Length: 459
Image 1: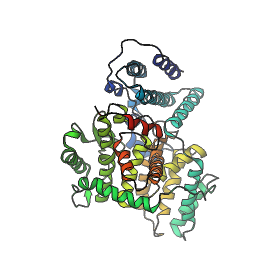
Image 2: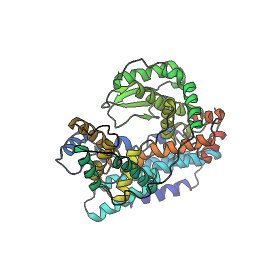
Image 3: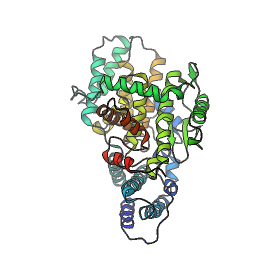
Image 4: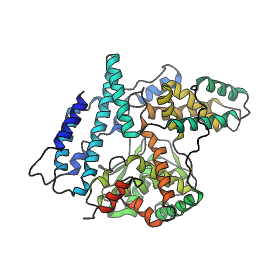
């Protein structure tokens, strides 16, 4: 296949001798960074959601014009040129070479992943579709990690035990019967699995750390019940200007079309989705410690070193980056929860039980509604609100292909778990935690990343 040929050629180029290459520009490589998140924003998302929730279509089929417009040949060629320049440059310390080649390899795999998504959506035969599906899932697992089956089944079984223990009547009882008719056959397997949880001592330690670290940032939040996306934008920009000053020169917060809050390091932008509903006081505080307290400053710290990947993120750091943001949110409240469980269950059911979009949706909205039910009196408004929210979760797992689960959102569970485990191992050591936050965009639980961060110099 084309992608496999390009990968082989890139490996050949990187291992071939090149003379006279001394200068490089890492920002040029960033121009070829594959970005699945914005490319998986569909043109007809609102229309398909409305049709689906109304029952007019069984499963959504989205149009991804951003994906369709990609020039894969140009992307591959650009990666070849920049990769050869960077990896042969005498200006890069040999100690950092693995970090640079890791980023290049990650970019190539993500480009191939996007190509597989494109090929899947445009396949005209069952054979081509199956081949593209296999490539897509192989790269998906390699890049984002598949869900652990025991953890998935344990999560699902735990929620079912809560629901089944309730004395439900009327409409609530009917919904529970409908749920059991939808569930995969092995829903109760391995329900007793003991999942990791940090100690109360570590949680209390981190709560004090967060209060100390982010007190100045959080004091900017006015005492009001709700914040629009534009109020959040203005608040974020105020915090960046007043608390970071020149060290965050060029950074800004913008409101635009997007599927989620995210930070774009090359553009120095914090993105707020224009369609997001108003946020509460508590939610805004969480967003501040996550976006401005973790993602932005770790990039700023990486920028102060002589290893470019620490600013943009070393390969494989995405889980820990999101995980650290989640951990800071939880530490702010002094409460540990298993973050991202609905997404994990949806991904697990899609992968291990071959459930399609409709089946995932019908199962998960009933689980989410019934597990938190305080009264058997369920209104149409409650159901409509829950269905809308769960559609968004299922869409985020199935976006890009509409039929195959994308495991990116597992980072919120996996990353938080990895970070809490690391914090448990250094519990109470403020110096070690300072290294976690100030070492740039690495995975602090990875010994090679920690070694890299300790060896870099500040120019």
